[in-house]
Structures are given as structure tokens and as C-alpha cells.
Length: 275
Image (tube, rainbow, N blue to C red):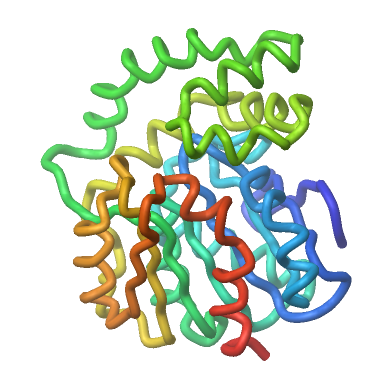
């Protein structure tokens, strides 16, 4: 199974996913940030082919065509494993981006028999007061106002891609300059097709995780951008310390650039740990 597809999870929900990279070889599961989707994994396809690995990304509930429900990092980890079981994939590496970090920790801790290595890129780790539902509703007005400036319903790919790039830090946007407008626009539309995915992600990220970093037993690595204002290197360093992970800071690098500008190195670091 390669390319773009959907699958039905054991409870009847739809999960939208992408599997690409090398034609065969070990699998790295990519856990996207927010608002983002499997399209972020697609930016690593050439690097995955060169590294001899396959990349799998499953949209979390509330993104694209993945059915929204009251998920948490543990249920998302179980969804990933259900997809792996459906397509006949056993042990994996995990690479988690930004708010995907909490999901990566839960996947590695909850399913230690499946996860051989964990990599975190631009990951945040802090806790804020209040319930998930309260946090979602508090964030909703500002998020919906921002979405209105992006106008994901616009059929003009070039105009939508320009607004999406303009919403990013300059260095991050520059890394998308060579990506065709039709692909950037498709990524924006999918990320913002449902609002609940982002709102739940953002709320869950800063509430207690169901699995602690100390529960992870596999080798772990973490990378930060020196200029990252979304996930400061000091935040990632604290998380890495609790994981017992090696932590690398990319000089002069912003949030998304820590991923988009470094796919070959990220995959080369994970590859030796994979069957």
C-alpha cells in the first residue's frame, strides 16, 4: 500500500494516511505537528528513498478526512498501531514533529514492542491549568479568526499557497518556496478542513500526558532550532533530559526548518536502530 489512502479503524472511524519513501525497507512513522497533516511527511519522501526507509503518516482525528473524536495521546497511539496491523507492519521508528512530540512519547511508551527508536523535532513540553474542553473553547475564537485570514476554501492554489507561506517565519516559508503551489494549497486545505483537530491537539499538548517521558525505554533523540519561538530549545532540552535522549540544537534554525531542512540527517540517525 503506497500513496494516498484511507482506512477504517476497528471502531468504524476513518483514518487518512500516506505511505511513501522507499519501495521496501523499515518503516518510520511520522507524527505531524499542528495544524498540519500527512503532507508534512511527504516533504521527506526523497530523503526516505535515499535512506532506504518507508514513511508512514496517519492524520490524527479531526484533520483532513480522519474522523474527529475525543482522542488523547494514548488513543492516537492505538490508532497508529491499528493501521500498522492492517497493512502488515511490525516494528517501527517514530519521528514526531512539534506538538506531535506528546503523541510520539505515548506511542513509544504504550507500545514498546513496536517502537525501536524515537526522534523528536521541535517538541514542546509544559503543562497549563484547566481541562481540555476549556482550553479548546478558549482558543477557538483566535484560531477561527486566523483561519479566516488563510481562507482555505479559496480554489485559487497560488493565492492560498501565498497566504499559507506568509503565515510562517521567513526561514520556514523559504523552505517551501520550491514546493509547487498546488501541493502547498492542498496541505493548507487538509490541515484546516476541520477545526477540532487543531483545537484538541493544542489543548492536549499542554495538559498532563497519559505516559511520562521516563516511561520510554527505546533509544531517543531530540532536535531543536536555535531560533525557534514556538518550541524553544530549552523546552526541548528538558524533555530530552527526562527521556535520556541526545539533544541537538540546529544553529540559526527556526521551527519548521528543523524538519524541512534536515530530513536526511534525521532519518540517517534513526536508520541504524531499525530492523
